[in-house]
Length: 467
Image 1 (cartoon, rainbow, N blue to C red):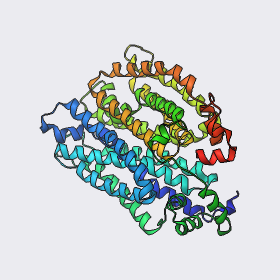
Image 2 (spheres, helix red, strand yellow; image 1 turned 90 degrees about the horizontal axis):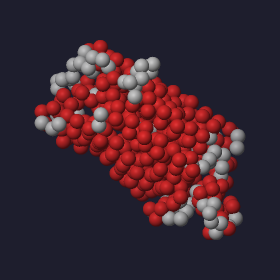
Image 3 (cartoon, one colour; image 1 turned 120 degrees about the horizontal axis):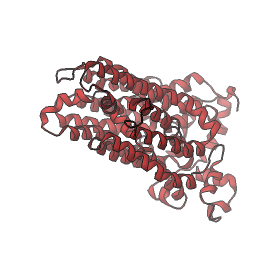
Image 4 (cartoon, helix red, strand yellow; image 1 turned 30 degrees about the vertical axis):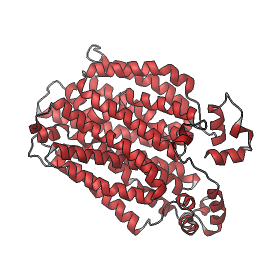
């Protein structure tokens, strides 16, 4: 299929960027408490609750909401459509952001849960929408925009944190400005959907037997003469309908492997860094209370965000060149070694320091697990299965983000390192290479012990069925 098949690449990229404003919002929401941690705590210190418990509640509220957001999206993307689901997420983002700037701790907590729901919805709905609206030849480029938009949201948040007061106080309003920033991008996306991107994906309309809108949606993407053939191929695509389809024989082995990988990703500390880098970098400074330390922490956070953008830009090339399995297996080794070094950073004189080692670890994780898992999940499971795995991922994040403030920093990283070492053998044995393989070939790899059932049928039929 050559470029003349597309009606307008400009429209496809505009649609992709508009949808990925939700990824940018998710990035802002995810790290806003981290960036403004001590300012928020100063504003709610009158609650009388232990500070560590406050930190745990504020940070874990997002993943708690994300569990429900992922599951909600699995329902609404089918019933309301991908486009309306994202619009719903935008309205919830506005409500959650407003609640998050209130003075009462319970209202802030409710706002953070709402923002978590929005992040979970966007994490599920945006890639699904973009994948179904993108021609196959453009899906790699359009799909990579999600990670770049998310990393840009993290970067913007940490950049704005330089405007925070040097000494946190309850009267500072800049942290509230940061918490309200997602509203701007949510409103922009609503306007984009209402004014220019008014149609949902062709596949959604076909699933709803709305053939007229399916044709109209295809005509926005492809030249008219190609639409009938593409429409017929889209009609053959089947989908998983419920949880039993995902946990049954067809996908059970894939789900087990993915759950293992999500456990490793979170229990080696990636979410601890996402929610507590400010606390980690503050403890790594010699002077825990000076103004210079605040500037240093902000700078380190910004470097961390830059490395996320770097990982998003080069990650797609790595995944295509090296494959999925090498990045996961050798990435696990590299991450584990870096975690052991962080745990012993105070005792090894020639190391560059805790803060630098943390940034190195974050970069390694961004180029391996953070990069490969979304790709690997989409290759192994249909859309409904992805939502179930995302909910499981948020559950793991919830555990780590709630427990981390109560654990000594060095002990926490040593614990993450031990987890990485313990998981190495299961990863080495169970992870299979999926680069360049068809859906049928991937299915066959995970069911090599049996040759009955679907694998007895014609390969082309299997591919359509498994998709």
